[in-house]
Image (cartoon, rainbow, N blue to C red; front, side, top):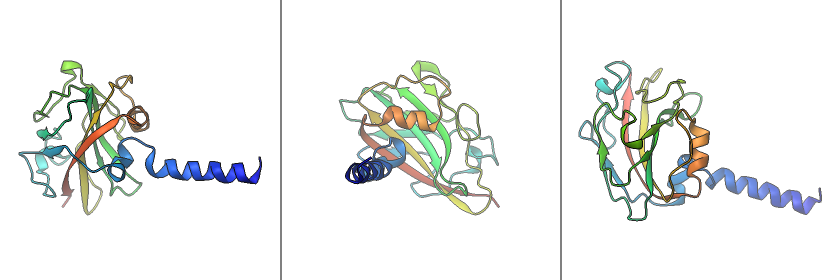
Length: 181
């Protein structure tokens, strides 16, 4: 390989590593325009134990506004960027109707076409906060997509991020915190 081609390829790899993925790097690429809230906890507030491994480990209720008219579907990604081994994915769900304005507590089942993926515990569905020590941040992110991802139930984070790549037209985030005593 000629040195100039190698440098160009290296620059392309570096550029993609900072902005070519789906959910993981959405925030630097565009400002959030979807407002995500929960009646269970305020932005940056403590997530009640009910929604964690110390409680019933059910998903908190979420609401959102500001989905753009061009959205074909929504995707939900919940993760912990403070996990000791790197970002830990707690929930993946996609094919959510763009007309949906939220999800109730303990949802979703896979009604209405919603599809769920495999979290980093290796299970399908929601796995609540359960940090090993200290207080961690949890990002509840909604992505408006111009497409309906053609991925199947049980897909992992990498596959979901790849399916969303280039299709995110808007997004929003609610952050909460949780720490075990």
